[in-house]
Length: 337
Image (cartoon, rainbow, N blue to C red; front, side):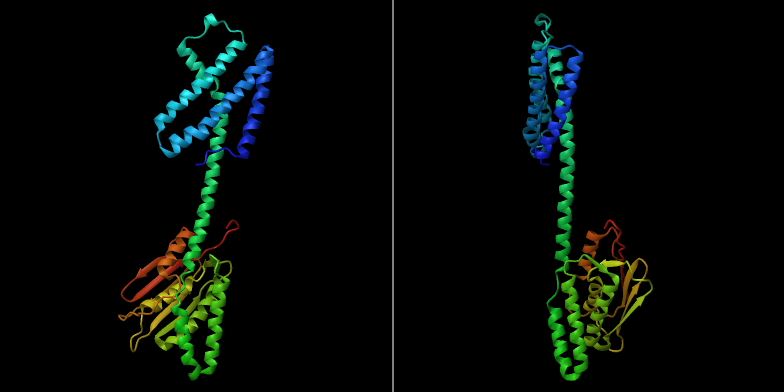
């Protein structure tokens, strides 16, 4: 917590003291106080209470609350400061008011009146400043937290495996001699994928329709590369409008399938992308043969981390001997998002 006073703090203090002086002058006028009391008591009370605030904000709170956590010493020195400046204010008021010094209060009454003398003036302003500092600190914390969240999201999304490009270039090299037409289509789909990655590199979420289009291009590359080893299906059981998911999340789920599963001789891997009202699910069959294929993108672990930053809902994973199922929440953005 930063307790140093800034420009807005001084403006608030000035306003509060200006109002206090006006009310004190009205009270003094009604009580028929002497002119010397106007000239000494009111300015002195403002000065002393302001000094108390400075001592608390620049010394006591930073030293004994923020840094050292010595609350007992904070209370002790706080009482000493209040009594010391309160005593000065009380003595000045007793003198300007022509008090009878022979009837001066006993020491314990003097200490009590000294402590409470400036507590109202200093305490009110002090309370306003602390409340203001608290909310400023909270706002700063949330801004830092938001910035950290954005940085973490960008970091998580930046983990793109270069092997993806190398593998696709190798596939393209083999395809050019065998099927020129399909090679051209392969280049077109690959360029669309990288164009999408560049366009969405700073986006936390994207529209579901665009993610599906991106996933279909990615599926084309996988089907071309692996032939009939994988059977991909996309089932749209709901409208895609006004629905969002983390950018690249479908691709991350599909590459997770390729990374961990390899088709057997007479048995391919069935992969179904099912889009429902609130969930997008990727289900794949499993074989006993696991692929050594490197993963491209954030991966399942990173996708879970992204959802922790973006949403209160979590990624659901069901892993059995025959199937692997991952369900991710579909985000519906509100006007405040």
